[in-house]
Amino acid sequence: MRVVGLPRAFYYLSSHGPIVLSPKAQERLRWLRCFEALRAQGLSSTQASQTLFISRSTLYRWQKRLKEEGPRGVEEKSRRPKNLRRPTWSVC
Image (cartoon, rainbow, N blue to C red; front, side, top):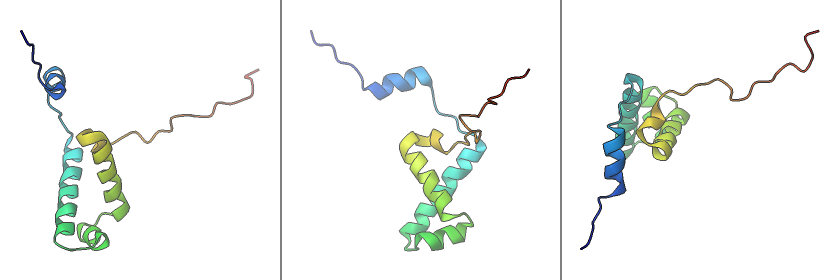
């Protein structure tokens, strides 16, 4: 008897459920789709970003995060520093 399993992605999705994005993240994905559509029409990245009124570096940053982390990569992240300096003197 042979036991056949399903792809790993199926088990992941069945235990985690669908990805729900915030409205801001959905807006960023929409901007990225527009940017890619403008690039496909033959505009340069500078012209496409000027048409959308979003800086080119921001669009490329969102693209990179989308590629590396998936849809959750375009969510807003904390800007708080990971490490904060502590005072080196004593209270007394």
